[in-house]
Image 1: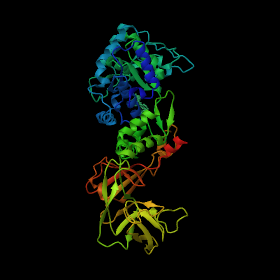
Image 2: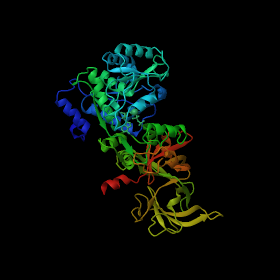
Image 3: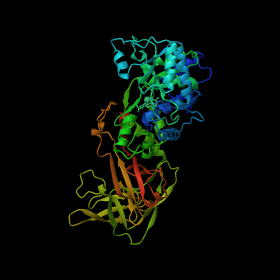
Image 4: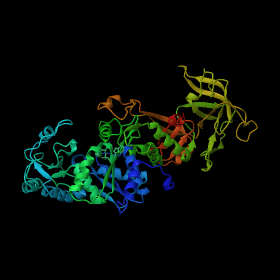
Amino acid sequence: MAENSLPTNFVQNAIEEDLAKGKYSGGVHTRFPPEPNGYLHVGHAKSICLNFGLAERNQGLCNLRFDDTNPTKEDTEYVDSIKEDIKWLGFSWDDRCFYASDYFGKLYEYAEKLIEKGLAYVDDLSAEEIRAHRGTLTEPGQESPYRGRSPEENLTLFRQMKAGEFPDGSRVLRAKIDMAAPNIVMRDPVIYRIARAHHHRTGDAWCIYPMYDFAHPLSDAIEGITHSVCTLEFEDHRPFYDWLLDVLDFNVNERPRQIEFARLNLTNTVTSKRKLRQLVEEGHVRGWDDPRMPTISGMRRRGFTAAAIRKFCEEIGVAKSNSVVDVAMLEHAVRDDLNLKADRIMAVLHPLKVVVTNYPAGQTEYLVAENNPNGEDGSHFVSFGREIFIETEDFMEEPPKKFFRLKPGGEVRLKHAYIIKCEEVIKDEAGHITELRCTYDPESKSGGATANRKIKGTIHWVEAATALKAEVRLYDYLLTTDDKGNLPEDFIAGLNPNSLEVIENALIEPWAKLTAPGKHYQFLRTGYFVTDPDTTPEHLVFNRVVGLRDTWAKVANK
Ligand code: ATP
Ligand code: MG
């Protein structure tokens, strides 16, 4: 797409204003800063598209930075999955993968500088006491009795903290700002704590760790980030971001600027890493990449394409206030993308046997089936014989008026093949339909004398002798309630008990045997499907990506 035809957004506008003022002479530089404490989800996809997208659009760079300042929750498994997901989405950080922990040494030096300037102090109050002293929105906080310590004393104590001379939680380092500040974040925030925790990268080298609010602005500044794009909950933290860079003398025209945007919330979808972890750990799903999960790895396994997710992120735009996006819009983007790419095949999910009584036993013929209506993806052969299977629901013994599929004495067209007529219904002792006896019109296939005979319904089918058995997994939303982005803590109680339906014995065209995991199909009349990684040569497994019905297109066209 041409650069100037991209829809603009307020972050891009802010960047252009900065550049017009002559700021950031070195060019635009953004970052995507995940905390490696879980797998990325669809909300992160939005942040990735935004940050890497802004860099691309302004001929700049985007770093990947792991915000690993909280050692107890982090793990290299998450680091690896995050890298894989970003690459899969189609973005590259080149050689710029960094870790906040790379800067622990520098961050420590900045903390000493603050102490020397009289702008930070060691506080002996407990976490509880600090909370109690903080005040409220309407009342100012109370100063700690340790606030008046001299820079020399603070420096000695801070070095002792670092040397491991005090127990965990016994002291903290706080910025010295203003306990009466209207913004609570500015009431002497804690910037270092003592925690003897093993870090996934620095091991046991440190027993003090910087707080996120201290590490983040400085990591941005160290990397030469120009625009630090984050979600709205950090708006109140921006004054501290700016204060810190100010007092540490970072050049106003080159130092990073924080800009907040609204996080993505989706209907029927969990977008909190913590809650997603709960789903995994309590076994409500098979893992982080369960196709029902809105994680990037879950969406990938489900068969959502990277192109569709990127398109969706572009279409929803960037907002300044929180809202909830209809998940149907994401599904619409997926359908739109797969429509052009997915090969069409026939698959019968709930088979009902049909014997074509006037078709010679032992005869097979091959009919041509187009792979995609775009006409550019070639065709394949479909075999036809005396015994076939159709979808159970495509036959009704006592159908309502407008039922244009198969009924006793009625005719229907078999896709790519002949018109058949139902002559007899066979039932077992319990009265269940086990088989249909039909006749076919030999002249009704493509090119035949009655090929164009008017028949209201066309159904899909597979030949009994050659069809392959397949396991088909159908998914529904994990959440049936529309949570408006505010999921209650006990959301587990409201989980959809029918979010997974497994069909063990579906039948598909043998053409799909050549399938590798991740290959997309449209099962005619049924939906979009993808081969699951569980597939083996002996056991085919398909996931339903999305159905064919597009509720979003309907809403959007109203
Ligand atoms: P969660 O609330 O799910 O735990 P998080 O914000 O703690 O997410 P991080 O790893 O810190 O997760 O997020 C990395 C980046 O992705 C941050 O810049 C964050 O603002 C952004 N991000 C997280 N969730 C969303 C979302 N729903 N929409 C847009 N951006 C998001
Ligand atoms: Mg976070």
